[in-house]
Image 1 (cartoon, rainbow, N blue to C red):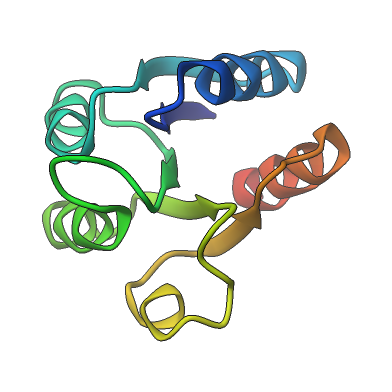
Image 2: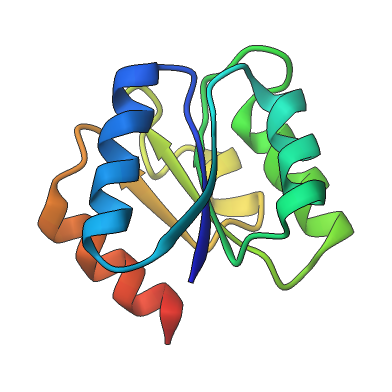
Length: 118
């Protein structure tokens, strides 16, 4: 599966890249500069899955999720946050397929990638 990682914290993005690669999936891009860059990268790389941080500069994850799904309804978006809880209204209404609470553990990432690839 082709995965785009979007997190404005470079350390988190690097860790997620390592997790995804260790699970035998391809990381097509790792975007750390904000939501606008995520939308551009998705248009360019056409990933199957976007791991998307909610709190980012230049458009938050909710806005990015809406935009991505309006352009490609088949892309799978998984929101991530250590600050926003999974029951926050926008988490459940933006169209994302799943939610990961930070810190993200390898076993949970492997489980998520297996489910998203099915």
